[in-house]
Length: 125
Image 1 (tube, rainbow, N blue to C red):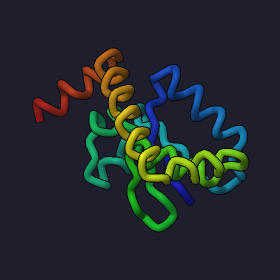
Image 2 (image 1 turned 60 degrees about the vertical axis):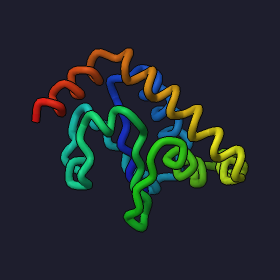
Image 3 (image 1 turned 180 degrees about the vertical axis):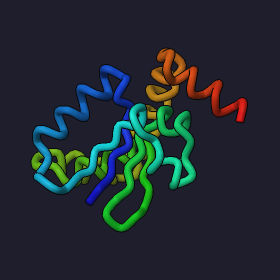
């Protein structure tokens, strides 16, 4: 089973994850809202702040995927979205997707208050 660690307090993130939940094959994903419980994420050595900065996915083999790669992992399991996951594996597209996702994720993180609170908490510890 693939575990998706997502920000349930982010309206955009929640909307996208809810869409994936509706179309995903039963039993293929474990959806973990890290704003409710981040224990499993912490066991992987990832702080709440890091988890909120970018989407994290642990695949069925235990490998961690972050950012654009996390989306590719999710999409590879979804009908019709598999095509996009395959296209995103092409080198120039993959590199561009990673850069664009990083820009988006950084802006989103700086904009959301709960992300900033988590970041302040992590920097104090």
